Image (cartoon, rainbow over the protein chains, first blue to last red):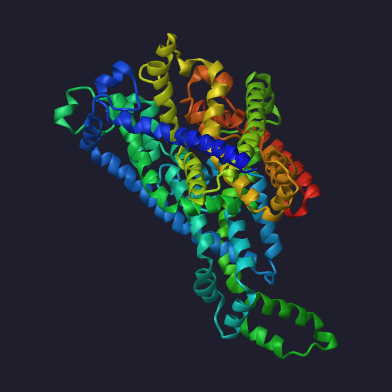
Length: 296
Length: 327
């Protein structure tokens, strides 16, 4: 019996150590390659250990730092503003949905659930945003399409409000003369930090990782967030040279940019915030996945 | 309005005034719930513009869009866009690719995820179990653009790890991955699993740790082996979760992860045979080729068939387990 357990445990550890390596290795390859000398990369390819250590790629990116800083700034603004607005909007929609006594509850629930099942798809959505709302080439095109993320969030918050906040608390506050807005703001939201934190984290991540809205709605590269800059550099090597990345540098402008390592370096810059922040909030992500799946 | 309500409140519901009382009651109720209604308005307005307006916009699949005339004034062309779409080989290729990839991934992904979740449950040290979970979820949180970079670092012809470090070990020639469609079903499957498996494992693991430990204790007392415990306890007890997740995935079989199919193959033309799916086709039609009519027809086709599949899947879930149904 105990021997059997031993065997299973060892097998489990071996499998998971291999999986851990598989999950981490690509990032090691990326970071190591960004720190290797360009000539070495051109000769022997990307590798897991920098054969000849060099910071040239980062130095090159630093000289054209304004463009990256602006892309970063745009991404940070879009993420913070979008998440805050979206979270408030989702919670405000979810609260009346959670109140069984609210007369319009059923019709509203129906309207939210329909959006989970059926959507117009890219073409009509594109036409609404560009022809009707005229959001093409504005920063709002990066924010508005993601606000409610999807109806699942509203349903998740709604379920939490309904099951975790005792209706007695709301009723007694109401008898004490507190208005609905006050109850919502000071009681309901206060008591719902777990679900708001989870939804907020996923929304933050969604905005940070979003490249689709930028690709669809932006032709003005000045409004590009970090993901769109990354996307363009990978698919179009000319973009790196033509945009102001590194162009201000007199020292390096004469020589051709260390393209293959710069590609890796800029990807590292794009992914680093996620890799750094993740260990601190991995608990909430793992919990959130389990929670969202159990009842969407 | 307030005076009306006050009047209504003072009014006794006499025979002649019943009708007035009914409307006034509605006023009272309206006023009571006004704050809640105000809260709903931003979200509702958003759903109308972001979700419902595009649904109505699906009808443009039956129009020939002319931006000079405007969308509303563009001519109706009946099924012409669909005739064009299904006359090309594209319609077949994108439908085949979308369904085959999804079907293969549902089978493979579910089996692997259950296996890994069961193995994770065998890791008895809490700290390790938590660490492994965190690590396998990490790829799920990375943007697909970064994933495209990671894949490029492995597959690039001039500098990729596989072409420069692995193939030479076996004395093999370089492979032009971004021009050879035959490798992509495997590459996309690997990337999909790398990115998404951790998520499913965590979901199934949550279901497994929800099983009462007493079942296992009883089984052990009866001398059941680990394998018997898995087959007799674990699998039957998590089967509702398996069935539900699988059916939901089947319901979404007409949709695919756009980023995976667009970014990871770097939109390389020679690969379309094995990388083009409905979502990428619609996108290219709209923004690349400017063929809005065919693009809209493909989108319409996806929305309608997808909707029918979701309804069917939900209907089946509902038959099996009411609580797990979406609606």
